[in-house]
Length: 169
Image 1 (cartoon, rainbow, N blue to C red):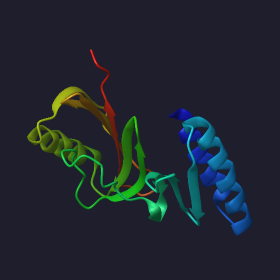
Image 2 (image 1 turned 180 degrees about the vertical axis):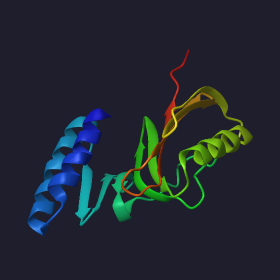
Image 3 (image 1 turned 45 degrees about the vertical axis):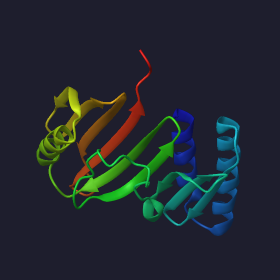
Image 4 (image 1 turned 45 degrees about the horizontal axis):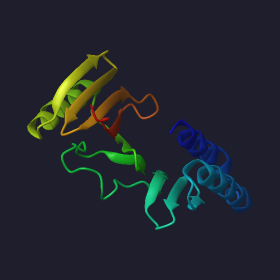
């Protein structure tokens, strides 16, 4: 997973700019991901957007304008109202989305606690550090971590949702 994030950063940094640089970054990222995942991967860079798809055309990672919440993202995980999607990852081992809201961290945290509880999620840990908060919840053999942090660039709040299947006990 860490190498996928490194690859995404590499593509984002190298990929910004001219078409020839985008194509070179796409090919480099494809080779790295194919070696890591053992399957054909297609990478597309267009301006500030990056998308990576598997051989069946299923989106694995998308950023910028290409980022949308995957259709397979569980409906029982709250998506904060009025937020915009920045990054979406849909991997066999889990899913991750990063969204941006204009609301403050305390309001976002309170909303997640309420909404996730109403969907049957059980809170396991919660840390509120003022401008950052972390919430871990479990339900039906799944775990979701919600990281909420003030975004200095926009003055809003960045929300990262990471869903993983828990290992069998």
